Image (cartoon, rainbow, N blue to C red; front, top):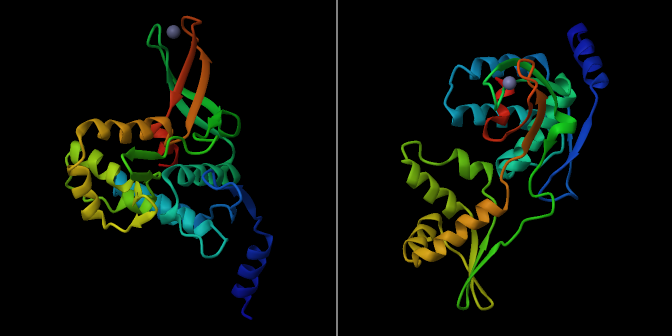
Length: 244
Ligand SMILES: [Zn+2]
């Protein structure tokens, strides 16, 4: 064994292992190692490709390389499990506190560095399980699921916003069954099925999306230093920004 190998082996031995449970399946325990300098260097390079999809892909790669549980693919995670994983990774690697920008509701005063504790303030959604996941049309049953990361990153990049929504809806169809028989449909076939639905049913699909908070929420309380107003803000979509 070379001297370099000895050092690397030693560093590997002293690396802590942490755990978290998937939100969508609490019996699945994920073991992970903290972020290393080489991971961080890669992320800084990747953040130059600043499209949201590229940033997501970079974070997926980061999470995947830190997960020690074999045969577990981040691309099969729901968006929410993915964010939950990233937040755990950040908490164990770089500390539980992040700085966010707070803007006062009342006077518009901007607090540039508002420290927030991820451990206490991050509320993952659908903690009580997935709600209303079946759409019934006569004896036709649409079983819905939360979209997977691979569905999200493999969306065609040239979609308009309405097509994007449509694609997300299609990816939410896990399977369709008639009575006891489960039908196996491709993505293109699912799109055709959606096209032929009465429009009122489309609303039910959207309700599923609303009923099951896809992402976690960061709830923040702060007193405005300028006007003393007590503010309550919630960060949702931008929750991963602290990584870049
Ligand atoms: Zn204020």
